[in-house]
Image (cartoon, rainbow, N blue to C red; front, side):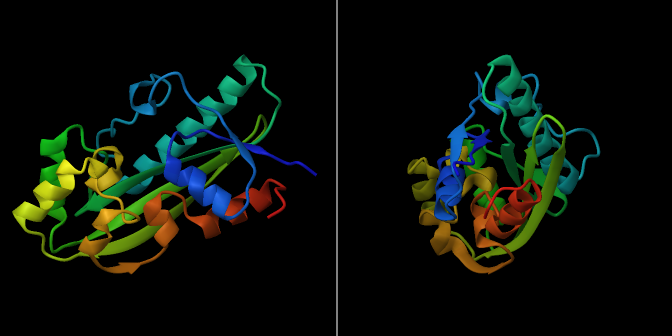
Length: 202
């Protein structure tokens, strides 16, 4: 039986993680980056907590994907979307807009513990549900030269908090508590349980 879902994400890391647990999917890409799509507003709202922020954005991405499925006359399937953000002292830290902002983010994380929040939303034409993964990450103290070298690699520029734990930034991490795959961008335990609730055989 060929049961497939749509993945409303351009993230190669989320594709790799779904492949890891053998979930069959097709990409459902937006015309623009979600950051530039009016239907998916990634700007934090006044007073919005990090948890509320990632849940809102993940659900908005999934809802927009479901709408696009209808507009593009695609075969009806469940749509999966996710969003990841960092919480440092209650402040939302998303993706850097430029190398200077990436340096600022990494300097702020140096020698500190922060939380990584990833919300996963799954929906179809009748229902939309979500799960939230919260993990803690401790960075060792970082020197200016190694921050500059890491930013120069350009790896941080498309990642929440300006780092990817699955890449070169792994050498910055002293300790994690929670879901490694959630820190990468898709918590596999929570995602699998959510897929089961929609009847996906996993």
